[in-house]
Image 1 (cartoon, rainbow, N blue to C red):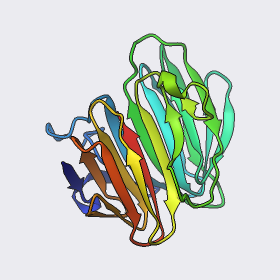
Image 2 (tube, rainbow, N blue to C red):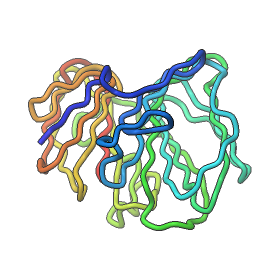
Image 3 (tube, rainbow, N blue to C red):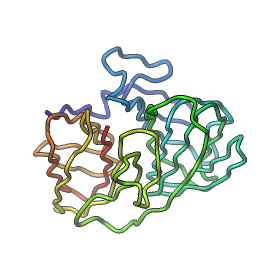
Image 4 (cartoon, rainbow, N blue to C red):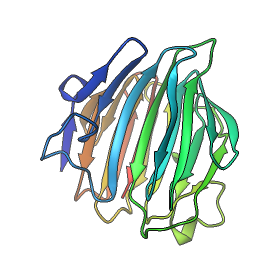
Length: 233
């Protein structure tokens, strides 16, 4: 079953520097029917104005993944980490026993990103932060594995999280077709970063999300040049 949540139906927040859409309940937006998908707790689709962002603030006991769509985000935290993550790349923070961080858009460009929270498989983990760059060429075969907590992916170049979950992504040229096998216990949540994509015959456009359950194989086609993430949980 594929249940699509169009971008225009999502909750959200907007001020002078941030325009955010929430796929699940977050902050002051609450929908008792949209509290998560398995251990997937948050997907926020953020547009952050150039030079603006989130000042230092704390988290604990959450795996926080940032996928940068356009622009770049600058990170710093109370562990002393500093880094810049550009479009198509990923950063992961294990909040664990507690960490505070700040995230700001590059001063020269507005930044768009997906912020994804996945509940860890245990509490009280050692906090950590990491980032990785990934190939930007359009995919023609398999989607790229970006993040994983699965033992079977331990030797891959994916960033590590503490949960039996994985995030795949890629750019598609129009009319590119591929097959993706889902291994998530709950299923897969698909978000479209750019363009339009057909997933098992269901059309999704930029900003849309979809819960997919009971469908072990996804037949994906770029209806335009497009970009998507597949989050397996």
